[in-house]
Length: 174
Ligand code: FES
Image 1 (cartoon, rainbow, N blue to C red):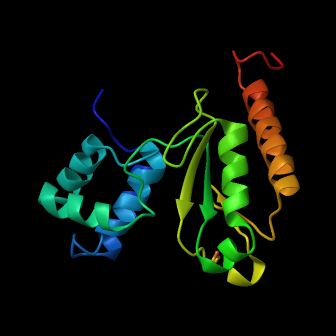
Image 2 (image 1 turned 180 degrees about the horizontal axis):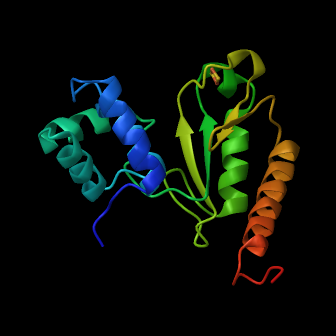
């Protein structure tokens, strides 16, 4: 099925068009919107954005590939980013990354078979004073240790199973 924005995101897109009469200025916020709507920016998603903004596909592709914030590959329900830059590295980020790889059974750039977690090593998350730092989706987790990572994973799994349990047809309360 062809991609399209949900009604809510279509309204947000229309608001962007009103705010940025120059369509090129609306490109990055529209890519952010598409990233959230479709989970990542597939080639199809970038073509969709190009057609909605009436911009050349090559222009959209070049812009999207420049920003690591914009995902070009599928990620898990919980996308875990481990800061590997110097402050975090000096405070054990490599041990956290190794631990995450071992317990999740995946490497950087991979997704667990159940689609729950994906892992990525990133550059400075701009919270060096609370290194080492991990970002899960939009949330920061600071002063991390291996023990805190284990608690975090457990809490994310519980959160996912509660959310699934609350959905009709997923074994939850009818
Ligand atoms: S080095 Fe990790 S947040 Fe800056």
